[in-house]
Length: 333
Image (tube, rainbow, N blue to C red; front, side):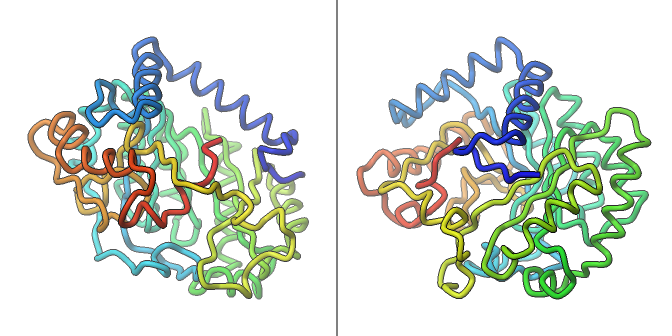
């Protein structure tokens, strides 16, 4: 089983691309595609006020997490105050945009499965006509919860598998339990064979020097379980030189472009666990667009705070957090 770096176009990347096309065929519509085209045009023109709506939506189910990954944004920028998104707040925040969303993802700074309402949020997104995606460490999950998750209409479930041994897992995910991960993998793939219309389930590994010797074993583990895909991904290791992978293929720096070119404020919107909106995947304290109230399409999506973000990104040298953001400097596809 090979890795899935797009620039090599291996078989698994082609399979994932085909799966993406099938999701577009399933959830796309003339209205959604026209909206996405307007959003992309506004991004290229750097419009400050846009006549499109986000075609990507992210909900943060919780800020809590059961593990303490040293490379996580929470370790780099500080953990967010405890918060858990309610189903009611998710529905109120997502509903104004539901007719235009192609993909809704349910993860951010915390572990999404710690929110008991997550399967219901996914079901709402699915029934609204959006593809749905969750990434999880699969640590604190009971089998009954997993069954609810797989029956919710979820399309893609990515499981963080950052090691193939208990020793390496303890380094990569302090507070986690490798045996618990294996037990939950047994459960989720057993359920996948049993439930109707299960999601595609895959592995994701953030490659560092601590685990790169185990990549073949992780691939073998994915093959043993019948995972639909496995991604070996670079990760930003700010101030962690001893964690940088020996193989340059997996070094994040190779992806970086000279300047920030972020599309998110034109294409996506995030609803944080505290019930407030922000424009991207940065720590939300940097970009508070406001709470769920009034008309979010007017007051948030084209509100004063979002207009300032777009204006700043229009500059040759954006200020503040955007200036140093590495996500805005990597290729989109």
